[in-house]
Image 1 (tube, helix red, strand yellow):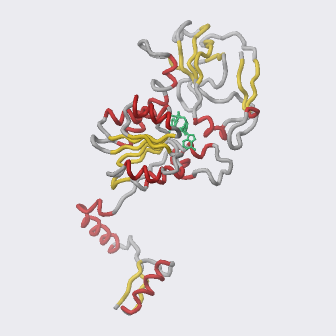
Image 2 (cartoon, helix red, strand yellow):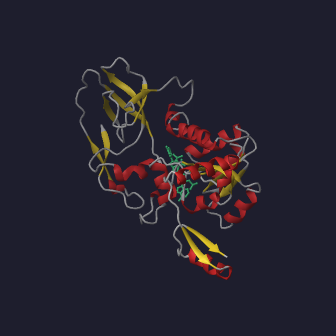
Image 3 (tube, protein in one colour):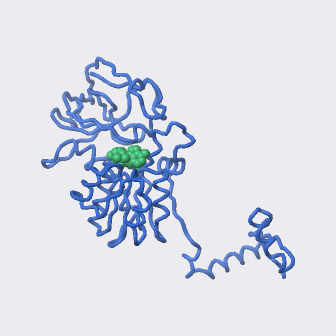
Length: 330
Ligand code: NDP
């Protein structure tokens, strides 16, 4: 059996010497255990992103499709295929206890109905579910809306764009090569492709989004995402899925902190303008008044005397000269 040990923490782009391929002898399996042999292994951006949390000296993280070679667990008969987060290794003894996150350490692949088993690591696995739930549940796309997908030609993005088409949206896919773009437009029927490396990208983005953007599925973060956010329509929805533009950033301070935190701390970002609650306007005023009268709400003003001092009051306020509400008393 062979496995990759995480030798050195990645700095910038991972280097081959950061991982070490080693051989190992596996013991015989015990009751309840089964032995698998990897058939397909997955490589995913999260491996780079999660690397700082991986203990040095352990097997590097990852999922695989594996065949059951020996079994002392009737739930996993010999010859069946499983998906497991076994790491970068050829052979694994699995004991069927949930992993530290509470997920099963392996699950039997449902009848693939003629589809390749490797799909269990993509469209019929984690990336597929990322696209399905991450897009539909957060973006809630409506027919006729404009959807932008970054990382569009990847595992997740390519599925997101297609689900968006199924939902009757206009779909703009962004990726890093024109070849990928041809695939997206010609085969996957995306409406438009934009190459983020194109020097005229900004202009093309404007042209491609005459009605603005209603939904943005963000796989990449960074400057590209800032540009898309600035094309969003009122009440647009953004599903922040990944931040790959920052994963290899050598200088951590430069890595895109906003998207990193959003993804990995599973935060929710939603903007608003107060007039959203116009129909409940007086409810708010009544409630605040009530709280003030009961002494539960404190309130303060900074008052500038004289209409002629309007400008001064204004710039003072802009520079923090006020405490509480800035007011001009004529
Ligand atoms: P992909 O198949 O999309 O592969 C990664 C792609 O990222 C590359 O092909 C490359 O395509 C693109 N890329 C690399 N560097 C940059 C950059 N600097 N700027 C823009 N694009 C770049 O990977 P996945 O579909 O598996 O994952 C896509 C994203 O989704 C990742 O950010 C990942 O971390 C995230 N993810 C999040 C999950 C979640 O639960 N939140 C679950 C699964 C994935 P190109 O040629 O276009 O540059």
